[in-house]
Amino acid sequence: MQLILGSSSASRRQILSEMGYEFTVLSADIDEDIRIEKPEELVVALAHEKVVIHDGVIRKKPTTPEGASKFIQGYSQSHASTIGSVVVTNVKSCVRMEGWDKSEVYFHKIPDEVIDSLIEEGSVFYVAGGLLVEHPLTLPLVESIVGTMDSVMGLPKELTEKLIKASLQES
Image (cartoon, rainbow, N blue to C red; front, side, top):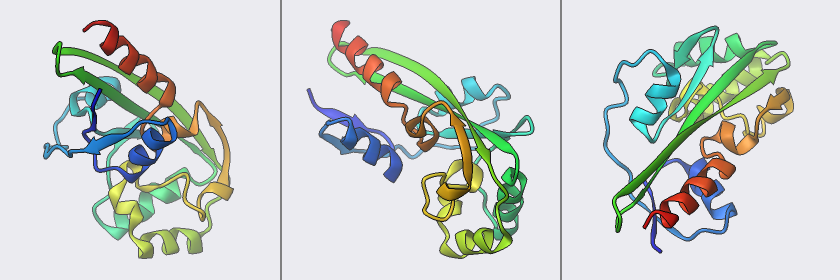
């Protein structure tokens, strides 16, 4: 079996490697600005994207320092949900399996100097919601996670394994 990860996400590569898989990365050039109101439907439609929900609003990747700052300040002493999808296609049988997973992240107060450092570093512009929970500056500020860290990072291991096995059984 040859496995292809259709995402350029470093977090997803890390998680799939941790699961013991060897794979090739082939990122799709897709328009991430499609408009779908239900986050569960949106992430499956994008199939490569993780969506962050804060106060009922879908947050994608911030595009400006001001936008990133606003996103991160909003998480301070609050929480956000991540909703991610996994789509597995068995190219031999053309069987496609898909699903989504949701986690909640609760934060302590996020100091302004941490926000400034994260924005200056720039990683906030490459992730949905503008915040890498696993980042060394962010992780100590996480109060709790309802769900799993791998789901928050964009590739829920349990769902991925389930879909891979199901797609192989259908061939």
